[in-house]
Length: 368
Image 1 (tube, one colour):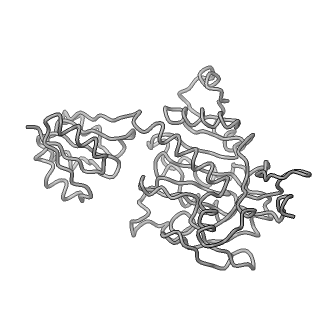
Image 2 (cartoon, rainbow, N blue to C red):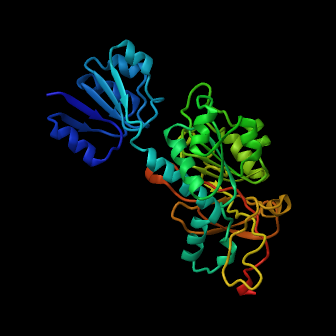
Image 3 (spheres, rainbow, N blue to C red):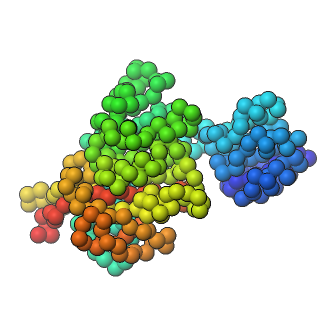
């Protein structure tokens, strides 16, 4: 009977399918590299997600291994070249999480815009400050999608459904293909300059690692929003931190990191893109219309004026339990509550963070 090692968390249904096929399946997650090397020689197949690193050393010890199955899209955690040399087949499931990743991207974009997690935390803290968390509409805003593969295309469809203008960059896509999707194909510099939101959907390669750094962030609109559910390290995290602290980046939603946020050697554990985040809001220039009885989110650009972003500058410690604490604002006199940043997506091993986003003083018409 062939033996299969499942070294990363996968759904119980998936493990059951393997066992029904007559395979002997061992689920052993959280293995160190040394532990994996010690036992891998006993297995004919290995199933991983993104946590297990299947390096050349691991493959050298895999005397019986015939196939490596990646439950997901990217195989950057597997030494594919060495596996090929050893006659080991590497397979993935490129469409397995396409819709889930696209929906998560849209959810994070909306949370950046509408302060969903902050409002939830405020209500749980016994507050009722609805005008504080109105945020902005995404209708009519411009979203830049970097990479129009399977996930990028699904993201673009959903953004178009919300009546956003969608710019896209993909060197492998023709202008005709982009037009068929309803998006405008542009170069990266144009995408950076014109987008209110930028979301990346590219594999991590030598060419894409660190592709968004200080120079690229400097080209972006003031108060832009950044979203990364692709791979950690595509956006340079130190540059992102600096962009959030300066106010250039109004907010960031990050599901993936170059290093786990829980690892003690993560340099951003105590930065605005680690455990800390600035509890900002999108600038709200006004709500409702003359005589209007309902509230509307600001239709202006995200981030508000540079003055309002500077005024609201703060870096706050975010508690994992979703509670609130109070810290002094770094760029103002007021003390502000520290709310969990954007939305937590720990079930995917990541999290989302927010930069500061200014608030206007206007209240809804019906509240005046």
